[in-house]
Image 1 (tube, rainbow, N blue to C red):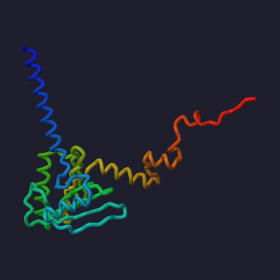
Image 2: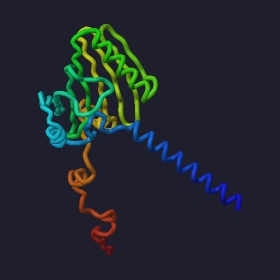
Image 3: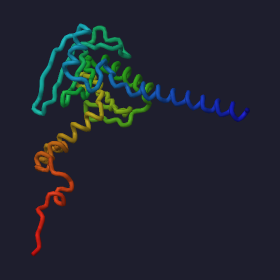
Image 4: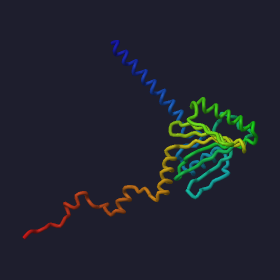
Length: 219
Protein backbone atom coordinates (compact mmCIF):
# COMPACT_ATOMS: atom_id res chain seq x y z
CA UNK A 1 0.00 0.00 0.00
CA UNK A 2 2.84 2.36 0.92
CA UNK A 3 4.58 1.52 -2.35
CA UNK A 4 1.40 2.41 -4.27
CA UNK A 5 1.12 5.75 -2.45
CA UNK A 6 4.76 6.57 -3.12
CA UNK A 7 4.34 5.66 -6.80
CA UNK A 8 1.27 7.89 -7.14
CA UNK A 9 3.05 10.74 -5.37
CA UNK A 10 6.09 10.37 -7.62
CA UNK A 11 3.94 10.38 -10.76
CA UNK A 12 2.16 13.50 -9.52
CA UNK A 13 5.47 15.29 -8.93
CA UNK A 14 6.74 14.33 -12.39
CA UNK A 15 3.50 15.53 -14.02
CA UNK A 16 3.70 18.90 -12.24
CA UNK A 17 7.38 19.29 -13.14
CA UNK A 18 6.77 18.49 -16.81
CA UNK A 19 3.81 20.87 -16.96
CA UNK A 20 5.85 23.64 -15.34
CA UNK A 21 8.77 23.09 -17.73
CA UNK A 22 6.43 23.09 -20.72
CA UNK A 23 4.84 26.32 -19.55
CA UNK A 24 8.27 27.93 -19.14
CA UNK A 25 9.36 26.78 -22.59
CA UNK A 26 6.12 28.02 -24.13
CA UNK A 27 6.59 31.41 -22.48
CA UNK A 28 10.21 31.62 -23.61
CA UNK A 29 9.34 30.57 -27.15
CA UNK A 30 6.98 33.47 -27.78
CA UNK A 31 6.33 33.06 -31.50
CA UNK A 32 4.38 36.31 -31.79
CA UNK A 33 6.46 38.66 -29.63
CA UNK A 34 5.15 41.91 -31.17
CA UNK A 35 1.63 40.70 -31.85
CA UNK A 36 2.35 39.03 -35.21
CA UNK A 37 2.58 35.23 -35.40
CA UNK A 38 5.69 34.04 -37.20
CA UNK A 39 4.85 32.31 -40.49
CA UNK A 40 1.71 34.33 -41.27
CA UNK A 41 1.32 35.91 -44.72
CA UNK A 42 1.58 39.63 -45.42
CA UNK A 43 -2.17 39.66 -46.09
CA UNK A 44 -2.90 38.28 -42.63
CA UNK A 45 -0.43 40.76 -41.13
CA UNK A 46 -2.32 43.62 -42.80
CA UNK A 47 -5.53 42.34 -41.25
CA UNK A 48 -3.90 42.46 -37.81
CA UNK A 49 -2.68 46.01 -38.47
CA UNK A 50 -6.07 47.21 -39.69
CA UNK A 51 -7.94 45.56 -36.83
CA UNK A 52 -5.73 47.48 -34.38
CA UNK A 53 -6.34 50.79 -36.13
CA UNK A 54 -2.69 51.23 -37.14
CA UNK A 55 -1.22 52.70 -40.32
CA UNK A 56 1.23 51.08 -42.75
CA UNK A 57 3.92 53.59 -43.70
CA UNK A 58 6.01 51.31 -45.92
CA UNK A 59 5.32 48.18 -47.95
CA UNK A 60 7.85 47.07 -50.57
CA UNK A 61 9.50 44.00 -52.10
CA UNK A 62 13.23 43.94 -52.87
CA UNK A 63 15.13 42.12 -55.61
CA UNK A 64 15.37 38.95 -53.51
CA UNK A 65 11.58 38.85 -53.10
CA UNK A 66 11.83 39.87 -49.48
CA UNK A 67 8.80 41.92 -48.47
CA UNK A 68 9.37 44.62 -45.89
CA UNK A 69 6.42 46.24 -44.15
CA UNK A 70 6.56 49.09 -41.65
CA UNK A 71 3.75 50.02 -39.28
CA UNK A 72 3.53 53.21 -37.25
CA UNK A 73 3.47 52.47 -33.50
CA UNK A 74 3.04 49.14 -31.71
CA UNK A 75 0.11 46.84 -30.89
CA UNK A 76 1.47 45.18 -27.73
CA UNK A 77 2.51 46.36 -24.27
CA UNK A 78 6.23 47.08 -23.95
CA UNK A 79 8.51 47.30 -20.90
CA UNK A 80 8.78 51.06 -21.58
CA UNK A 81 6.24 53.86 -21.90
CA UNK A 82 6.10 54.75 -25.61
CA UNK A 83 4.04 57.94 -25.20
CA UNK A 84 5.74 60.70 -27.17
CA UNK A 85 8.29 58.34 -28.73
CA UNK A 86 8.82 57.84 -32.45
CA UNK A 87 8.47 54.05 -32.69
CA UNK A 88 7.60 51.76 -35.59
CA UNK A 89 7.01 48.03 -35.94
CA UNK A 90 8.87 46.40 -38.83
CA UNK A 91 7.88 43.11 -40.48
CA UNK A 92 9.97 41.08 -42.92
CA UNK A 93 8.52 38.28 -45.03
CA UNK A 94 10.32 35.51 -46.90
CA UNK A 95 8.50 33.20 -49.29
CA UNK A 96 5.24 34.91 -48.18
CA UNK A 97 5.85 33.96 -44.54
CA UNK A 98 6.70 36.29 -41.67
CA UNK A 99 10.42 35.86 -40.98
CA UNK A 100 11.11 38.61 -38.46
CA UNK A 101 9.49 41.41 -36.52
CA UNK A 102 11.20 44.41 -35.00
CA UNK A 103 10.82 47.60 -33.01
CA UNK A 104 12.57 50.72 -34.31
CA UNK A 105 12.89 53.69 -31.97
CA UNK A 106 14.13 57.05 -33.20
CA UNK A 107 15.13 58.28 -29.76
CA UNK A 108 16.04 61.78 -30.94
CA UNK A 109 18.70 62.40 -28.30
CA UNK A 110 21.35 60.58 -26.28
CA UNK A 111 19.54 60.52 -22.89
CA UNK A 112 16.43 58.90 -24.43
CA UNK A 113 18.56 56.43 -26.40
CA UNK A 114 20.50 55.47 -23.26
CA UNK A 115 17.27 55.10 -21.27
CA UNK A 116 15.77 52.77 -23.93
CA UNK A 117 18.99 50.74 -24.10
CA UNK A 118 19.07 50.28 -20.33
CA UNK A 119 15.34 49.48 -20.05
CA UNK A 120 15.33 46.81 -22.77
CA UNK A 121 18.68 45.33 -21.74
CA UNK A 122 17.47 44.93 -18.16
CA UNK A 123 14.11 43.50 -19.27
CA UNK A 124 15.69 40.88 -21.55
CA UNK A 125 18.27 39.91 -18.93
CA UNK A 126 15.55 39.40 -16.35
CA UNK A 127 13.55 37.24 -18.75
CA UNK A 128 16.21 35.33 -20.71
CA UNK A 129 19.38 35.67 -18.65
CA UNK A 130 22.69 37.03 -19.85
CA UNK A 131 23.04 37.57 -23.61
CA UNK A 132 24.64 34.85 -25.70
CA UNK A 133 27.00 37.40 -27.22
CA UNK A 134 27.66 41.13 -27.26
CA UNK A 135 29.44 43.34 -29.76
CA UNK A 136 30.60 46.95 -29.74
CA UNK A 137 32.02 48.73 -32.79
CA UNK A 138 32.23 52.50 -33.22
CA UNK A 139 28.69 53.83 -32.80
CA UNK A 140 27.02 50.40 -32.77
CA UNK A 141 26.34 47.99 -29.93
CA UNK A 142 24.45 44.69 -30.05
CA UNK A 143 23.25 42.12 -27.52
CA UNK A 144 22.05 38.70 -28.75
CA UNK A 145 19.89 36.12 -27.00
CA UNK A 146 18.95 32.68 -28.36
CA UNK A 147 15.57 31.45 -27.16
CA UNK A 148 13.65 28.43 -28.50
CA UNK A 149 13.29 28.89 -32.30
CA UNK A 150 13.93 32.64 -32.04
CA UNK A 151 17.01 34.87 -32.16
CA UNK A 152 16.57 38.13 -30.27
CA UNK A 153 18.93 41.05 -30.92
CA UNK A 154 19.02 44.46 -29.27
CA UNK A 155 20.81 47.09 -31.39
CA UNK A 156 21.78 50.66 -30.54
CA UNK A 157 23.25 53.37 -32.75
CA UNK A 158 24.64 56.12 -30.54
CA UNK A 159 25.40 58.40 -33.50
CA UNK A 160 21.83 58.54 -34.84
CA UNK A 161 20.18 57.71 -31.48
CA UNK A 162 18.40 54.66 -32.91
CA UNK A 163 17.37 51.67 -30.78
CA UNK A 164 16.17 48.51 -32.50
CA UNK A 165 14.85 45.19 -31.21
CA UNK A 166 14.82 42.28 -33.68
CA UNK A 167 13.02 38.94 -33.32
CA UNK A 168 13.97 36.41 -36.04
CA UNK A 169 12.23 33.05 -36.48
CA UNK A 170 15.06 30.58 -37.05
CA UNK A 171 13.23 27.82 -39.04
CA UNK A 172 12.22 30.31 -41.77
CA UNK A 173 15.60 32.04 -41.56
CA UNK A 174 17.31 28.69 -42.18
CA UNK A 175 15.11 28.09 -45.24
CA UNK A 176 16.02 31.57 -46.51
CA UNK A 177 19.73 30.84 -46.00
CA UNK A 178 19.52 27.53 -47.85
CA UNK A 179 17.66 29.11 -50.77
CA UNK A 180 20.24 31.89 -51.04
CA UNK A 181 23.00 29.27 -50.94
CA UNK A 182 21.32 27.31 -53.75
CA UNK A 183 21.14 30.52 -55.81
CA UNK A 184 24.85 31.22 -55.32
CA UNK A 185 25.76 27.64 -56.22
CA UNK A 186 23.43 27.61 -59.21
CA UNK A 187 21.56 24.64 -57.81
CA UNK A 188 17.84 24.33 -57.31
CA UNK A 189 15.91 21.97 -55.08
CA UNK A 190 13.38 19.82 -56.92
CA UNK A 191 10.63 17.93 -55.20
CA UNK A 192 10.53 14.14 -55.84
CA UNK A 193 7.34 14.28 -57.95
CA UNK A 194 8.82 16.90 -60.27
CA UNK A 195 12.05 14.93 -60.55
CA UNK A 196 10.15 11.81 -61.59
CA UNK A 197 8.54 13.67 -64.48
CA UNK A 198 11.81 15.29 -65.53
CA UNK A 199 13.57 11.94 -65.50
CA UNK A 200 10.73 10.32 -67.43
CA UNK A 201 10.46 7.35 -65.08
CA UNK A 202 7.22 8.33 -63.34
CA UNK A 203 5.22 5.39 -64.74
CA UNK A 204 7.88 2.73 -64.91
CA UNK A 205 7.46 -0.08 -62.35
CA UNK A 206 10.48 -1.05 -60.31
CA UNK A 207 10.53 -4.48 -61.93
CA UNK A 208 10.02 -3.06 -65.43
CA UNK A 209 13.07 -4.76 -66.93
CA UNK A 210 12.05 -8.23 -65.77
CA UNK A 211 8.32 -8.05 -66.56
CA UNK A 212 8.39 -6.23 -69.86
CA UNK A 213 11.61 -7.46 -71.44
CA UNK A 214 10.98 -8.96 -74.88
CA UNK A 215 11.16 -12.79 -74.77
CA UNK A 216 14.11 -14.45 -76.44
CA UNK A 217 13.78 -17.62 -78.49
CA UNK A 218 16.55 -20.13 -78.92
CA UNK A 219 16.82 -22.36 -81.96
